Amino acid sequence: MNISYNLFLLFISFYLISSKKPVIGMYGLVEPISDYNKYTKEAIDGGFVRWMEASGAEIVVIHIWYSHEQIISLLNQINGVLFSAGPRRPLKLDEPWEQNAKFVFDYAKNNGIPIWGTCLGMQMITIFMSDDNKNFMEKYDNIGLKNVELTKEAKDSKMLSLFKKTDFDNLKNSKTSYHIHKHGISPEVFFSNKNLVDNYDILGYGYDSNGKKFVNIIESKKGKKHKVFGTQFHPEKNPFERGNWFKEKNPMDALRRSQLMVMKFIEEARNNGNKFINEEEKNKYTFINTYEKLKIGTYNKSINYYYFDKKDF
Image (tube, rainbow, N blue to C red; front, side):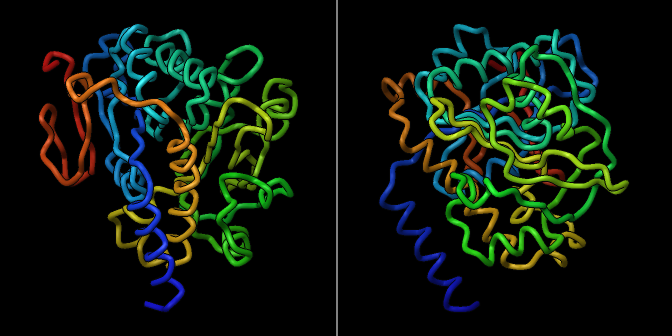
């Protein structure tokens, strides 16, 4: 391990020790994915939990069956919101899961609570910020390691502000960013939507296996009250993907970029002043600590997912 990477680890350790631990609310995924009716079971992707924990955050579940009153109560006490990737296709915006997700997004956005969305999560936050809240996603064929075409806004962005020149060069020129999506937003659709153009900067594009271009990285424009970040690719996969085929093609610089990106989101969350009223109130909610057993719910180690059932709450 080289000296520069040792210094990087030392910087992270000091950063975490000297900073408060923010709480990130992670919106659950419907389990099974075909269930558009019951919404009584949900799943949480453990890779996202570990990715956030590695930068000092702790994760609480925003259960998909929560009422609006419960969502407001929780959001007023936490520091960030995560919409993760997940197999929810097609999006049905008139269904309870999407409606609750939009309520979470709108409340967090309007109250300055930082929001992150990846893959399906980015598609959702894009739709939620659009003019008419319609599903304008197009089909893409995109699975595997790809490079990212950066825009001029990337080097002046918050999300990538910890990057050095080599980080930008490697993100642009090396195929180390993992993509696994069948839907996405085209640049043409993005630029035809006034709300998207007025609220988000595009930091990067990607191309699927057929050469079709899609929006790959977005963040809130400077000066906006909301703090929204999105990636169509999966930065959380770099450190925590279990498949050997992925690790063998995954150099150290990709791991570093992954953590630098999430550290900026966690920094925004640390700057949020929300906190739990007391420990008794905090204990009402479902926290996931990957170093301890779940108090409620189960964990499937082979696929790295946590599962919860409404009947247990």
